[in-house]
Length: 494
Image 1 (cartoon, rainbow, N blue to C red):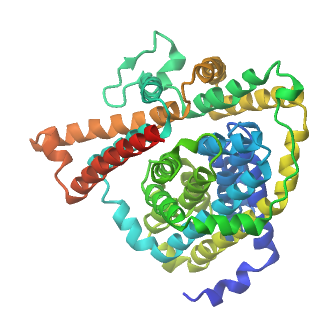
Image 2 (cartoon, helix red, strand yellow):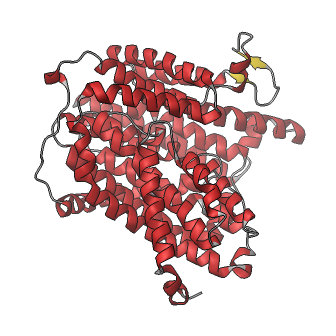
Image 3 (tube, rainbow, N blue to C red):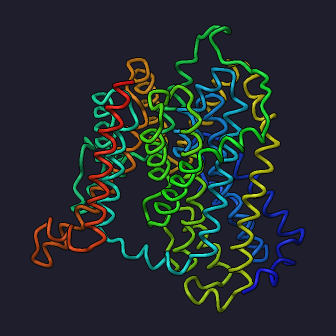
């Protein structure tokens, strides 16, 4: 279908209003600790039932795109990531804020997010059918190797390998708590009914990053706190510098689109893989976690690149790959729209307006972010005695809103205290998050692989290496391991 057919529909006031309001809502929701795209879309879902399907979908798409960026605002300014995917932005952006370069860090975040979002939407528009069929080739064996590669990047994230290993093992331990996904047996529940449902990544992130940071800020003198510094840096200077990192941008977009395409993997793995690759390939890896803009570029570009690619299996096959896309699928079903290959024949107006309209969400995000940075940075003018209770309340609200559980609030508080101790002794929080996110993926896919291998009369190794795709992924895992070892030697020499 020619885009000129749908251009007049895209440029109507209802569509533009839905796009800009959706992105703005998404940015606000993303900046609130504990809330994410799935929560924001869930809250606004009933509103879309009264709207035309294409308008309602773009409202939800705008929220999705805006949320992916919004978490980096508070991550950079006050070291409080709104969502787990904004953790690398906090790791690099907050040190820049401490150096009086908050405006610069925010510019790098919004423009990198916009570039990643634009590339992801282009992939969605141009390659939906072939990429959807490719994503279906990833079975338990392939997903196991993808998840395993995520664990390897821990070696590239942290300075001390021993502390990083402890952190990831602690995260994997947290991931084992609850019911075994295959046998249904209780593990480390100690008779507590609340622990049977496991520990979600949201209270873990809120505790280790948000609550821990606020605990450490309690009692700080005014001269020890980060304050607002006016910085004379232009948007064009930042954009030019971002495009000077062409190879880094390319790798971030490839990683974001590839991982976003895989159902059930999520954005977190893409962001940390991209960040770790940026550190590995950097000429100055020792400067990471002290304010290196390469980390922001890589993480934020990969972050928003996953938005477009995660919608590929949904639109082409009717298979939602994440909680957020599952909610968008629900909105389509309410409007009587059947997902899958027939969507582009039965309702081409809805399909193509949504596809091309997602480009508008990137434009809206870039405009709101670029011109709102001046006002975002004013957060640093607020006294810490007002920020601490506000962030704590929002963090506890975010932990509760996930499952309407007071127990999740208690988990967040407990991990906040643990996180404050860890920060004092130098244990990095990022590997813990990776352990919590990847633990269930590794375990479930390995268990499924074992069951399928037994049913086929094969050994586990035979099943895992049965397909050419699996063999290729094994090579990727080994290459990643070799590159991480090389990067650590390079850092040690520096």
